[in-house]
Length: 479
Ligand SMILES: Cc1cc2nc3c(=O)[nH]c(=O)nc-3n(C[C@H](O)[C@H](O)[C@H](O)COP(=O)(O)OP(=O)(O)OC[C@H]3O[C@@H](n4cnc5c(N)ncnc54)[C@H](O)[C@@H]3O)c2cc1C
Picture 1 (cartoon, rainbow, N blue to C red):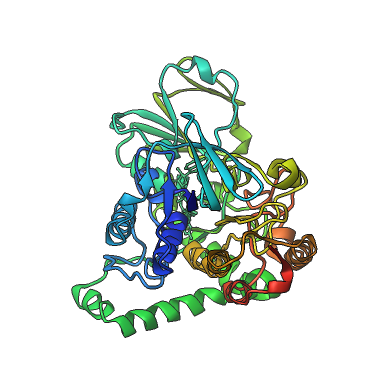
Picture 2 (picture 1 turned 90 degrees about the horizontal axis):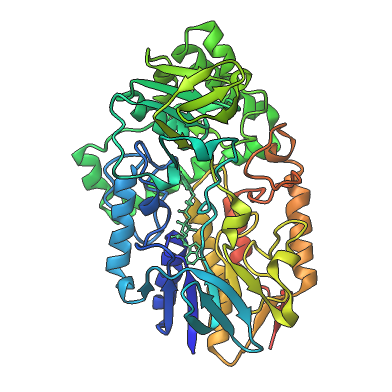
């Protein structure tokens, strides 16, 4: 029997493996459904893909990297991922093309079953299947008859030539605003279908000059730089949660100014002003999207020209029929389906789907009553709109490793008490009422179908870290 099975090989899985290695726990495997390891940044190869958080903070704390720019692009993030896998010799632990289909508690261990009929037994499961790894493609009438190419941004094909093609991008969120400027460079015509305009802020991106890269190789300077960025970003929580005035000053006004400066045409600008409070949906950080929309070959279709159906040769909108060769769905992800992408059954046959029927919930966003020795990385309400997801992952690791350290000794099982989980969840949703994600007047992927904010942690990331660091024995059933 294995000590631990890690499901997923993104930064969540990698961070878990590094922590296990550090604790000299080596009897574990990492299962990955894809043919390659690495998660988000190996998978999302669409043109323009890049991180929205300063690279220096979007790195594991003790794994600094010689980043070439402020906001790393996909290829560099994929290299960083490979670097971590190689440095920590994780290839020996990773099993590719293993799609976990169910995880069932068997009195004293987990039985992990896979699509191809194999199974693993482990005392502990670390589920790191990613918050945004299950793409959503809207069901639009007639798509099956469309003769051209169509795919989700998450599944970018290698063999499609975009040059001089008629392309439609459906969506105007975080991936779309990165893809559109790139496709606008080569498309004959690019149709952008925008259901909702988003708030956009300036991206302070630049290539690091050689002297800065040299300086950042000095550990203490790297740490200082990282710390300054961290605290500057942390201040955003004051705006998101505590001060509507500050939100206007540092969010809405600069966004309106950028829109005015980048889009002189009043009529186009009108289509691009969101009708919700800034921050309610993820703020987009880009300098190239608004200029791209004004290129001669780009047409913006807002909700007054919504898609009715696909035809063999293109798209029928509420006002016209458009010929298209290629359709890109930049339509996001299903966070609830991603959190745990397979069937999980805990003690007494309780399924996680049933336990989460109303909404996903977990103690510290990580562990659930009736699911002993089971930990969810980037679980419910661990998302963060203002800083690096990796900071959150590393906070969760502190809690997970406290539990795993106990399990290594003479403890058989550990799980949060129902009372502790309930108290934590009530606190999360009470605090959530104060945030712009709750009151901002939008629908977003931060919410589930009933409108409950299930993705975000309603506070400072250092508060979350403090909670994860202080292991509370009384909050757990330990046998
Ligand atoms: C396009 C995009 C841009 C993003 N930009 C940012 C950003 O700017 N800043 C930020 O902080 N965060 C960003 N994120 C969020 C990002 O998901 C996290 O930052 C982080 O990479 C999550 O790591 P992870 O390991 O939890 O998940 P992932 O990287 O998604 O890894 C999960 C892995 O689990 C595997 N898996 C899933 N289900 C199974 C199964 N049943 N069996 C076996 N394997 C399975 C998947 O194949 C995948 O490899 C972005 C996400 C996307 C998709």
